[in-house]
Image 1 (cartoon, rainbow, N blue to C red):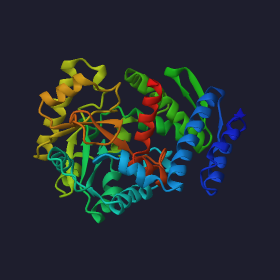
Image 2 (tube, helix red, strand yellow):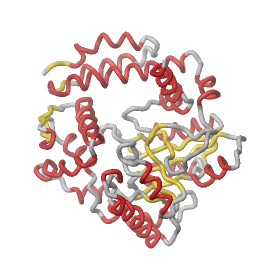
Image 3 (cartoon, helix red, strand yellow):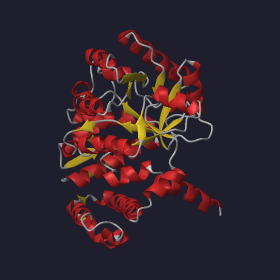
Image 4 (cartoon, rainbow, N blue to C red):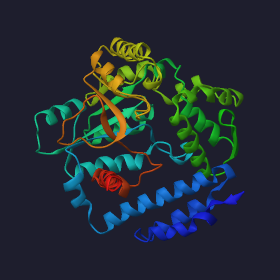
Length: 386
């Protein structure tokens, strides 16, 4: 085994703009990670990206430029995307958002004058060009139990409305939640074999486990048909998909109780959580219609808004936007990064800002909400054209 730190220590010079208190944490994270050779190059690229990104965020914040970026690049509104809200992020391999970062996010929005509103109110205010405030919408994908046990008390303290997008099969305990099964596999072993990838990966510590998760996750996101090929690995390891559904997702009764809460709106997330783009049009339409019908029958409430599973350009596209509108949804959210600005808004391809403790700190959250990432994206586009 080779130590990734020996190959990337020289990259630490890129963080000269970061605070001194941050550097030992970065060095310690690198020195702890001993990875299989097949992960070596991947790990080095990931470390470089993280050092560059967080170094830039800290640099911008350190010289007091966040307000300037916010005035130029931040949109009129932003939709934030959460999944799990975890009390112990390390035990879940930093795959969700910590309770501390979640509460910081709401506190930051309040301190900076963003009004936290429902999705419908946000879209209505944008439609009538209400420029009195900036608006933030909180969304949660998949219907995790900890959205109620950990997040709801915080949301109540801030009187913050939110949207929860729920797939049918999470409630019926039949969803192929491969990402949860993969996490269970990786955190319970120091070495894992991913049969479909033909790879055996050693992951004895948190950092190496995170990198394995990230590598396999990206492999699936390159072709969503690959997700089902992981089932053989999970079966061989004795991991029960049904048990994971039951452990992590709300059941029907809990969702019914939650839906009566005055801060809550429930949206659709398809029937099976399949990437719509890999389905034919007829099957994709069934996914949208049957999910909404199921939720409306269960909750006795209208379901007007949708989030596409995975939400990437490879998971949903213009055809699916047309289907969402055709079957009666009023909006559909993606996972594409961005804020809602003054330009004409496509309500069936809404961008969001994902918040995860695996990638975000308090400083990076503030920087991204202030438009730093959008500024970099625009600069990259300008450089590629000139």
